Length: 93
Image (cartoon, rainbow, N blue to C red; front, side, top):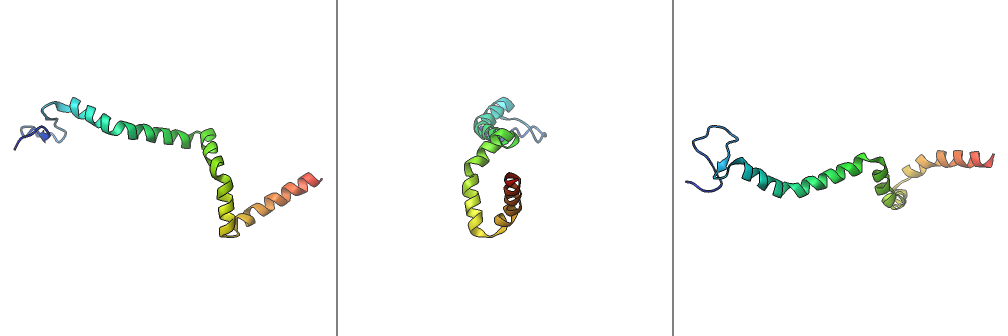
């Protein structure tokens, strides 16, 4: 059985090029299929690794996240209470 997407049966290498066309066509096809996704992953990685961009992303959802967490339980209140008390004391002096 032969076709444009079968491996060359005479080749024993596991990475043997597809017949006809060889690895250049396979590489081009791989780029066409995967390049957009690879670019998106690169952009996401940059957003996570760049503190300024990451801070911008967090700032867009921070207020809503605080409000939601406050409604769920008292953990946020317990975490913030000492900080707020210290800030009030410092400003009162």
